[in-house]
Amino acid sequence: MKEQIQQLARQYHADTVACRRHLHAHPELSFQEVQTGKFVAAQLAALGIEHRHGMAGNGVVALIKGKNPRKRVVALRGDMDALPIREANNVPYKSQNDGVMHACGHDVHTSSLLGTARILHELRHQFEGTVKCIFQPGEEKLPGGASIMIREGVLENPRPTSIFGQHVHPPLRAGMIGLKPGIYMASADEIYVTVKGRGGHGAMPHDCIDPVTIAAQLIVSLQQIVSRYADPTIPSVLTFGKVNTVGGATNVIPNEIKLEGTFRTMHEKWRSEAHKRMKKMAESMAKSMGAACEFNIVKGYPVLYNHEALTARTKARASEFLGKDNVVDLPARMTAEDFAYFSQAMPACFYRLGTGNPERGITSPIHTDTFDIDEAALETSVGLMAWLAIKELEGK
Image (cartoon, rainbow, N blue to C red; front, side, top):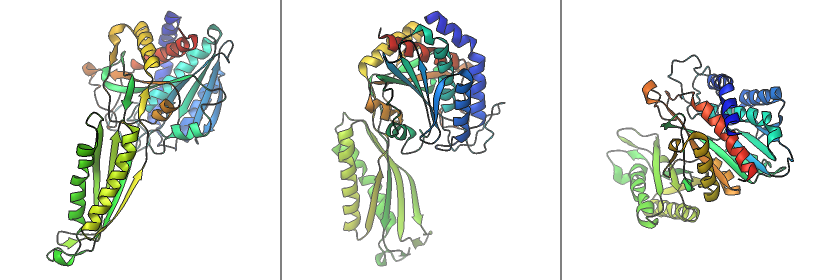
């Protein structure tokens, strides 16, 4: 079976590349993946694969039924949305939608899952159970397409016993993967703060309530939530990346100032406690200085947890398929992913797909305007995911 899957991944590699390039040239933003969803559905229809189009707006769910389809169900997930970035690459498949780019590799994830579905459909008489392929919209934008698809029943009828997802990773060479059991990625919350004071002439601050200096103190003081209230063994990050005054000039104190930031951690109980502490500190500090503070937290993706036993099986199976030297351990990371919703619902494994090639200059990080991949990675991604799905169905 392994050699057969590897041969099919090689055989269909050119088609997978063509699919990826089409998607890369026609990116669509989160929850706007209209043409992407239609493309995925059309590809599945051409292969004769049973599917449903329209979950969470543009999502697509396909079922590949082997012998005895009710015996066991495994899910595979690929996200479809792009980012608001203007592409700088000069390649034939450069984005044709100005200001929108597949800079996070979701074109890779989608084309890989289509290629995987093709292989599984061809081999469906050689395995028992069902593989559910989830083509998900809106990973890059809250509330996250995963949460909406789950709410709309994507994990039911039939219900999977486990789920796999993958993500491009430029630091790893094409042909490799990396993974980590247990807590792998952080939760991510958006913070919006408005400090309201009383503006006036910059030369007469005693007649004002200066929201700028208050906001400056808040930015510094709120870091104590992380440094002095968090258990030092729990990773936590608080970052304010945007500060805007409403009005103001070199000699004008504005009436209010707005802050926007992110809070990330890897412990759900501490996450909830930190929310309360930040809000209380900000509001009380502003009040003590005569100002008012509106502190709003938009709760984002939860902690992504890789099921230990499933991840151990995945590592062993990937080593068998790719070779032990091509499977590496990765550290936890403070980035976030809405695949975390799936990981909270059932045993899940989210691994990194190597896409880099330093000799060819393919090293740009994700979320940059020069991001690209070594397309040899598409053979790895398609073959490995098909292999993992079949082995998990076998339970061996």
